[in-house]
Amino acid sequence: MKRKEQEQRFVSASTTPDAKEIAAKFQRLKEEKNNRVQKYPAKRQKPADDIASTVAGHYNNRDDVGVQMRKESPIFNLKQFNNWIKSVLIKRYVKQGGTVLDLCCGKGGDLQKFQQNKVKTYYGADIADKSVKDAVQRYNQTAGSNKQFTFAANFISGDCTKKPLSSVIPANVTFDSVSCQFALHYSFETEQQARQLMLNATEKLKSGGYFVCTVPDAYVLVKKLRSVESLTIQNKIVKACFKTKKFTEVFGNQYSFELLDAIDDCPEYLVPCKDFVALAKEYGLSVVEEKNFHEFFETWSEHDDFKFLTDRVYKLREGNMTADEWEAIYLYRAFVFRKDGQADQQDAYNPSQNFFKLVDPLKDIKYL
Ligand SMILES: C[S@@+](CC[C@H](N)C(=O)[O-])C[C@H]1O[C@@H](n2cnc3c(N)ncnc32)[C@H](O)[C@@H]1O
Image (cartoon, rainbow, N blue to C red):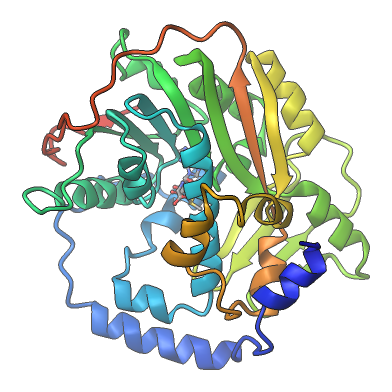
């Protein structure tokens, strides 16, 4: 199906409500939700003296909201879309019965997807300590229910662009797959940080294993920026403010990004696509799939293996996506890399084995 036709069927005629209306609704929902108790307080984090602390503070301050609030979000369908993308990527590239590293795991929003894909062992790492504790809670709370996860989980708190994960992961652990969703762009502040993140992503990745990531699409951002007179590109739900239209360096191209009900004015960095692929090559990674989200949807949404995710799980067929959400989706790109070399012999894999083990948020989280 042509992209235009797909967009017409998929995007509704309704527009995003006004920002004031949305803000009032969210205030009310937040007040309703404030009764929730934070079980495990976050480890005290440094004041925002650098960009990393600003980013960590931003994500620490975002509450893990309940199902109802999630449904009321003005970008509910965009979030569904992003979850669809991640589910498809995980299904395609994360090895069943394998060990996965979820780099910049946030609140563990992808735990369920890894369960669906029947991984055996999970490692999640993030700079935002409160998010890591939310992820632990999300994992633990399946205990004893019929939705109990069957994989073993390990959590790490710390800056993955400044410290080696190998310092807290046992030497005999290697990864079949590494996933870094909507986060790698923070590392493009400096070359040193991007290199540390790439080292963390690849050091323990097995030959033949996949590194899967999603980042803002620099081609689209720069194209849109050059088509407007000001230094800001925006619609009702998304806004990116740049300092310049000329980009001569690979790293440090900062802009400030807002996504309604998700990211409030947070510093981000362009990830120049060709430079990223060249950098990945230095870490033994070759690109196997690279697509803007619109193209990714066009390619995979009707595929037999993913149609149930499109239609049933994420319900992306009801024409309820606003044009603003669809435009925001266009700002992202998926990259999949394969680690060079011959893949090892497949381990025997028994999907009925259960490796679940409660994680003590006070003792089991490792700190970088
Ligand atoms: C948009 S969220 C995505 C979270 C998760 N990957 C997902 O898709 O739901 C970006 C995450 O990157 C994390 N992050 C940003 N900079 C980081 C760093 N230097 N080291 C580790 N995590 C970082 C943030 O704390 C946040 O949880």
